[in-house]
Length: 456
Ligand SMILES: Cc1cc2nc3c(=O)[nH]c(=O)nc-3n(C[C@H](O)[C@H](O)[C@H](O)COP(=O)(O)OP(=O)(O)OC[C@H]3O[C@@H](n4cnc5c(N)ncnc54)[C@H](O)[C@@H]3O)c2cc1C
Image (cartoon, rainbow, N blue to C red; front, side, top):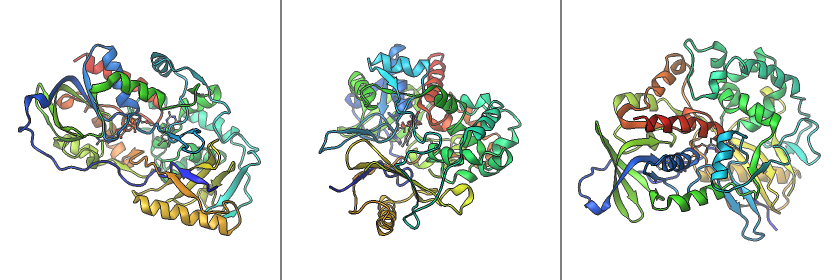
């Protein structure tokens, strides 16, 4: 049987319907929906917001471009064996908010067992270090990261404010603006770079990213997670939360839908939406944007100069039973060049592996697939693994993933101005661009935004 690959794109191409701004006006009364809040995006924070607002007695509608809720949370079911595997979010860091959220849907959580890979050295025998540019195995032994982690932990203690959005002090500590490679050198952290690279997938060229973004992705709460362990649903199905939320929210969710235009006035907001059953207008008091706020993702929104000048600055730089880790032995910190494969890991489902690929620029799906197939052909030619050509079971793009702005913008108060957007023109924001890629932290942050909305 052929090996199948899924979950290939961390940064590849943009899914979704692209539309130009369209005027409201010609729709009938029956096409108008009145809600307290209109939520754009039905992923981790959008779904959490909808449930949170419902529990607080507010009405809402979610507009989601895909045909399901969950965003980066996705479960793949192998059609042959019925085996399920997580194609996206894997673990949840224990926190009161995440435990209460799962309990609300009667979904028992259990400790993630075994702990997330890679464990401290020695790595399991089944782990191969491979240079994907040649396809050959390399003689590589990862360093023990314990001391580096202790030194990193000391540095993190200086930045407790990073757990809560981007509420940065003025001036911003210079170390946070250093390229991560220089931060590693300054504090002698080389031994942990491979592990951070594995957990920081989607960050693009790790060593060149401002340290601020690396700490946001792999910070004190992540270290705490490693110390205390992570949680997963006991039945292994991360998507169940979203299936149950969809059943409860029912008609309040507009799936396979996109915003054609928004009109935000002093006391009201109107959102014109394209849905599979025709256009609808949502009349609301408040807009809650949970999607990555890049200009190309906000087409049709009536952005003003302040919003446009901030959002234009975001870019997403990226973002059998063996575990294959791409290693460039001669490169700085042994990290391979991107675009390229990060790693190939087993899924537990026979003949199904998980391959993660990253690129500092957006790539067409076809190009990602070709590059992956070329890399795997090199592995075969070198006799490393995969004797028959694999086929792709599922390609899932997670772009745009990590939204960053240049160091000069961070220094000039970008995040202060971004935070001031909450409430500006009846609009609030949540999602990873405003917090971090950790759903527990995101749900805590979103809860504070819902409180702000309730206080209006
Ligand atoms: C491969 C992978 C593994 C991960 N593993 C973990 C993990 O183990 N633990 C953890 O805590 N975090 C993990 N993360 C990070 C976590 O999934 C994200 O931080 C989280 O999903 C972000 O939530 P969000 O609401 O901001 O975005 P999302 O969950 O991505 O939701 C955004 C939603 O908006 C929709 N959307 C986008 N644009 C539009 C538009 N214009 N109109 C309408 N809808 C739109 C999208 O389709 C999506 O459903 C992982 C991420 C990836 C990619």
